[in-house]
Length: 69
Image 1 (tube, rainbow, N blue to C red):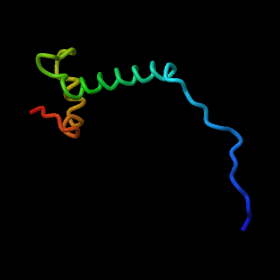
Image 2 (cartoon, rainbow, N blue to C red; image 1 turned 45 degrees about the vertical axis):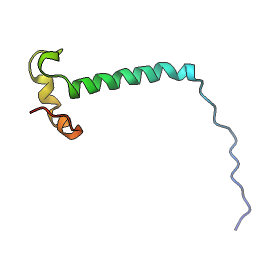
Image 3 (spheres, one colour; image 1 turned 180 degrees about the horizontal axis):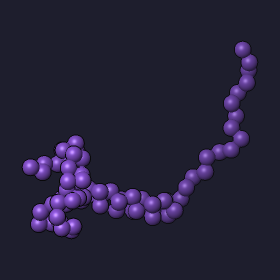
């Protein structure tokens, strides 16, 4: 057995919150858009006419527990 000790040459660098905040906001907006399309894109609140989006994500709605029938 050796007495070798793992000693990393570099330390992790902290990322300032002001650099992360635009990506956090962007990710949040994308998640809200995805929730809208999966959960509410049908009927009176529909942004896209027809049932194309609803039929495209139909199984995902059931998988996530959104009722649609």
